[in-house]
Amino acid sequence: MRLLVSPMNINEARSALLGGADIIDIKNPKEGSLGANFPWIIRQIADLARGKVSISATIGDLDYKPGTASLAALGAAFSGADYIKAGLLGIKTANQAEDILANIVKSVKEFDPKKKVVAAAYSDFQRVGSISPMLLPKAANKTGAELVMVDTAIKDGRSTFEFMSQSDLNDFISSAHIYGEEVAIAGTIGFQHLELLKNLQPDIIGVRGIVCGGDRQSSIKTELVRMLKNSLF
Image 1: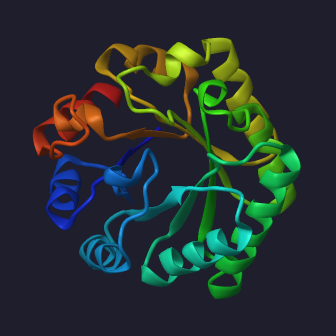
Image 2: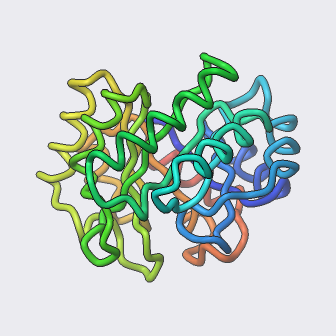
């Protein structure tokens, strides 16, 4: 398992790197669960971390607007992200998911075939009226996205594990692996969830709040990143 930590500025990125994060995932919590940050922030952090770890960047909790999403994805790729993560919040059907992902993948791959697209859905999809994460692996396979992720849309202290059972998550991971995709699990992960995650064995664990001392609007702390990394591995 690799540890993905989500800073929102270069100081937090330094803290995540010092703590041993494997992937730096640039986001803007002020704009939502997978809120997009600014191109210059992505460039700054990419310059800081290049050659040390992989860089991911979120492009937003997206509505069904494939053109807008494609432009955002290209912007993140051009700014230095290795992984471009799209949150499918406003997506209602498998066909919509395939359409928006296909266009995101095209915009990223035409720029740089080595960059990867992450399709993210939400464990609390029922309360936000979004697509089920269980539809993601097939949609990603059909469109060329290399990684699927589950997160929580509403950040109110409830975790992914309150909305998806261990069986659900096992099925999600297994389905993605059958298609040759990597899997990331996120969504208000706490230290109490680590044993379950060790049993599930996703490829990537995504965090922010846990390494901010429990408040995702606070700042990432190096010692908490290090503590989490040591607890996982």
